[in-house]
Length: 70
Image 1 (spheres, rainbow, N blue to C red):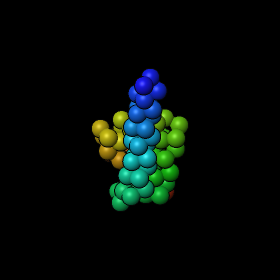
Image 2: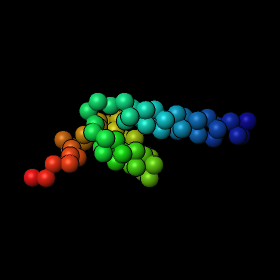
Image 3: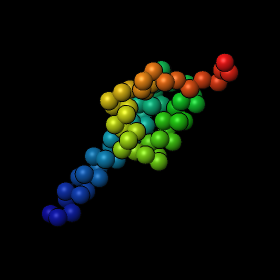
Image 4: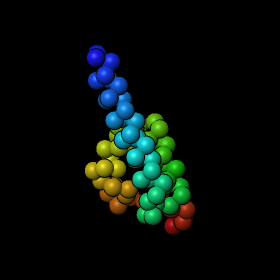
């Protein structure tokens, strides 16, 4: 019984990360490089990345990454 709660929390955590990665790769709003930046964020900062994605969306504060030089 004492292992059940941590196992359930871990399963929910893993499901949230998998759901976020799927949402990132399926998003039509993101360029390829933006997808890779989001994916790196999920790998290195999963909690922060999840919070930013779910609360602010794929382009927080209107920030976009492009290859254009201005």
